[in-house]
Amino acid sequence: MIGRALIEDFPILQQKIGDAPLVYLDSAASSQKPRAVIEAISRYYEHDHANVHRGVHTLGSRATEAYEGAREKVRRFIHARRASEIVFTRGTTASLNLIAKTYGEAKLGPGDEIVLTPNEHHANLLPWQRLARQTGARLVFVEPSPEGILDETRLTQAISPRTKIVALAHVSNVLGTIQPIQAAAARVHEVGGVIVIDGAQSVPHMPYDVQALDIDFLAFSGHKMLGPTGIGVLYGKYELLKDMEPYELGGEMIDTVSLHEATWRDPPWRFEAGTPPIAEAVGLAAAIDYLEGLGMNEVEAHVLRLTESATRALGEIPGVTIYGPRAGRHAVLTFNIGSIHAHDTATVFDSMGIAVRAGHHCAQPLMKRLGVNSTVRASFYVYNDMQDVEALVAGVHHVKEFFGDVFG
Ligand code: PMP
Image (cartoon, rainbow, N blue to C red; front, side):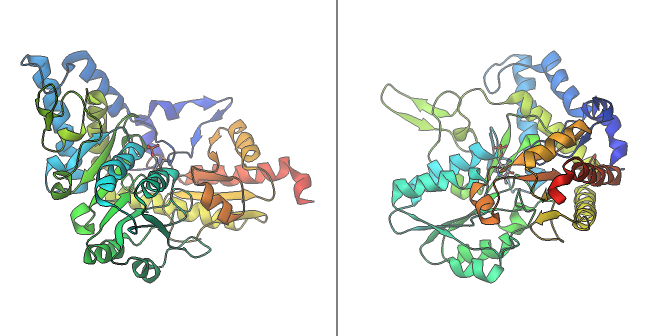
């Protein structure tokens, strides 16, 4: 079972906005949470909470077990080799910054190159900009096609012996395009570099196997995959993590401390200074259980089906501009209606109970390439259905009527 029937499990989706039932099409920004996740967090706070890795008391052991159990669950979900390759962070942004600060600052120098695309989310651009400024390394941008499709040959040809890092979103949060990350991984490994994957829009939607993809570092966020805010993951191959310096320093991440020196624990704890997001890890584990209950193959097929139907339907409406490819896009549909500002479209949608994102989607360089300041983005997830696609189509017709003069 997948689609609208799941709304039973999502209390927040059962409400009305004004008189209209909520149509939630903003899961790429943040997904909603099933009762199972909310209850797992409540249960943890009601029965098991204490700090982790410290107390010898019963609650401390339960909390530690729950927290480390969540790590093992994430390991299985992305098929990492060992749980010590899973670092809990605040989210995708924090994970990417951690890699740039620790691995990046240690490994890069003048003349080295970081290969990426102009379509990246700011979270996968700004940390590399700063790293390049600090180390004298150079950013190399591989141009996608006007539709936003990244050619595999072009990408692999941009990777040279100077390339130390390739940093790519697996799935674009604006165009829904799927980047050829496997070819990039194979090529960058030939020249001794690493690949960093921004998995914010891919891990929630597809079966994932970091070993099969041969990914060196992967960043993703719990809140986009039915889990709570405040937790994300940095996956790193153990042989890379074990040689990296910590990012933050403090409690929980040390081996020994004297007044002038300290030594670090092994990964992953070396990268988890201070009290970690324990309840959030419990919630993320419950989210993974829920997704696995649906089956990730089914989740992917469902999301692709809805995105494809919506793209086809909106593509047939005169005056609608769709950004990115018409087929093969993953979970997000980005568009504008005539010359109507995206915020105006989203405001009219909201009056109909339809929640979409409007703006630059944290990808200003991409917006510039598209020649617009902002776009509307509808995104789909497990609880959406064809009914929501129909509501979106009705919304577009309503916006056109509302701003009729724009179309003459
Ligand atoms: N990368 C991509 C592709 C995203 O879509 C997002 C979220 N919009 C992020 C990074 C940042 O994720 P977070 O805000 O959870 O750190």
